[in-house]
Length: 581
Image (cartoon, rainbow, N blue to C red; front, side, top):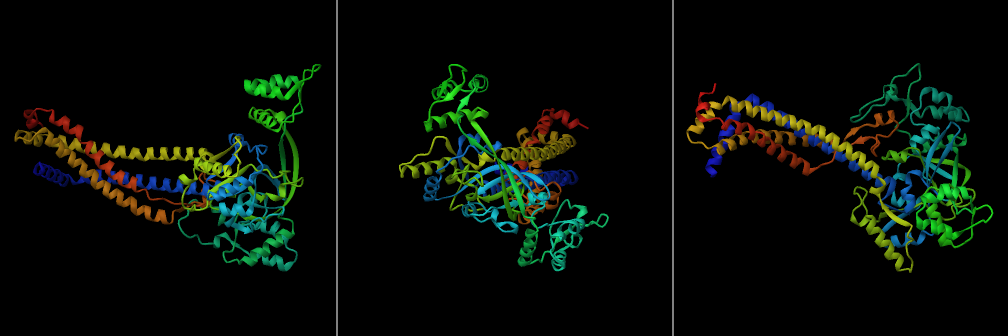
């Protein structure tokens, strides 16, 4: 048996040598397909891994503790869905090995001297936030916020729109017409001029794609400028102080405080048309137990002060979006920009602001009175390079929290829940998965073309050797041996192509893993957001399973492509094969 197989393998190898041109062309096709698949798979894996890590370490942590209604309406930022007395939850989680960070998230509009922009605001505990997330370590200029002061750190893209912070890439006209206006004397004006240099003088290092031509060529003398690379920290601080003294860092936040409260009176028409049809039978019974009916007007009026009952009624009204359960208060907050964030995650650099939670507790802020919208959670032992594991899953965190509260004779309210980072990033994960699948399908089509080439090569080879096949069958070679011989021949083509493709794919992947490709110029051109949570370098990642599996699959499929042409040839009678021309 072994001798027969060796003889068949030797015959297949000699056939490859007899048809060198066809063998080389088909082998190259397989190699290119394998190489491209490995490269694209590694690149997409690297991009997605970096994006997912950036979501965890810069945005969310491993999970959030929130009200269930807030999670359902999270895209609307329902600030009225908040909770108080969160400190025991943080203590219980801390004893279980988790870091926590309280937040109050709301939206509003920022007004600066130069313009306005809608924004998302995160009111945070700066110390807790710094332990759990890493964006505070990426201050482009200025510093991170301190507790107890009305100050804010903005994302770099928001700062550029609002023209606050230190200008990073102004034009010559902007420098002359705006920035130099903050100088209080000639010395400061000269100091500011010396901080900038033409962008054309800056040499780009590494591989950078999609360079913006207007960065280097002046248009009507309006050339692009950039901050010098050798500026000292002291000079940046002095520049910031000059701009701050001129009022560049002073902004106002306009927002609406949404207060959730059961209405004292519900008009009959609104109850019958807007509220009642949307409530379940149990919820209708609940509402009717708390409201009496005016015998004259038919309107409903509140007759209870039971906090538990009122809480259940409010949840039911908010669930069906009954506007009468919300009271809106306009608020204007004066605040000073103290820092600009430019982290590896574009979400933190966009229209986002971070301000101290403690200054928003009274009437000068948002009248929070100790309430928060979420409690971020991450294991104290978590590594920034690793995604949350089983110990940071929502179920495990919830069990730890409930256990810690039970030890204190406390319980978690039923309207609160723990939601994992994957639930929050579900939309992004779905889109990235679809992108990955569609790209891989396109690359897989190259495989199909390669295998069609192999089938065509084998078909032509078999047609050319019809007499030879008839002679071997006449001499006693079985049909099974013929099929094996030609499948081995095709398999060798696939194997050689796979080895070359895997080798080339790995060689290309080495610099892609170490350095990647710089897309920062493209990011600037499209507003800093690719859709992925990456700001500049797209790096690959090693996927050993794909590297090995692609080679094996390519070899096996190549061998399989010879089966049908060979079976077609051996169906011809031996006598006809010998007469075939």
